[in-house]
Amino acid sequence: MWGILPLDKPAGWTSHDVVDRIRKDLCIRKVGHAGTLDPLATGVLVVCVGRATRLTPYLTAHAKRYRARLHLGIRTDTMDAEGAMVSKGENVPETQDTILSVLETYRGRIQQVPPMYSAKKVRGQRLHRLARAGQTVERDPIEVEIGALNVQAYDPPFLDLDIACSKGTYVRVLADDIGEAIGCGAHIASLRRTESGPISIERCRTLDDLEDVEMAMMDPNEALSDLPEIVLREDQAHRFTNGRAVTPAGPVGTIEGGAVRVRGLNGELIGIGRRRALEVTPKCVLSSGS
Image 1 (cartoon, rainbow, N blue to C red):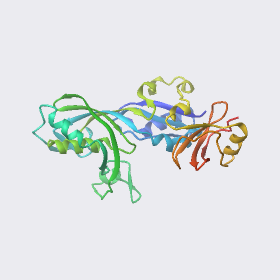
Image 2 (image 1 turned 120 degrees about the vertical axis):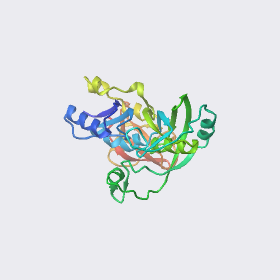
Image 3 (image 1 turned 180 degrees about the horizontal axis):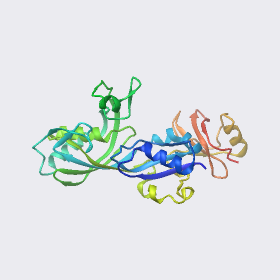
Image 4 (image 1 turned 90 degrees about the vertical axis):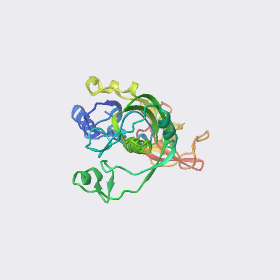
């Protein structure tokens, strides 16, 4: 069995907990996920089973969308509700006016410093392990892009935001930065991932609703529908699956070096290629396409 399993991760579970559960249920060792969710968070977790784990880098690259509830007036060491309070602010805005002007400054490309409580590695060590040992280390800032940052509701001290962002965005850091800019501090009270690329929360199953895993699997073509596609003849598919470049009959709808979804005449996803001038070279092969 192989495929892509879109799940609605429950609160309290790590992403690795979910992977372990699927491994045990399916008796398959080769299982992974495409984008970590904090234990506090719920929502879209894309699980890859069997040979679909080869698609993980392309699924991880998807932009994400979240519904975040910020608790204004309190900062925590983990930047979410699971952490210890480090400061308390008194000047929580009564209206949205100040909030809206602050949010405007966080749209577009911004710099973020990865939080100490994260799975990111620095000099081979995960930051959260160093943090729990009482250590703080220098972290290089990363550039991310915030595509949407909109107020959904405001009932002080709780601020509900709809956030669309690039991969690698730390929503906890965004919340902490917004709270600091407002002048009262903030942390994430709850977080729900509603989209990962073309995969929406409506397409996901819960762990309690997996009686038929194969029926819950998603067509890889659907999961990667944001990538341009080419369809190969049988002879071209044979070349591609044997590691050789092919020249598609039509134009390749991506930039030089861009990823391309490669299908056979039967519609099955053969793999992922990269555009090189007029050719497409194989980067990931899944099937023969015959």
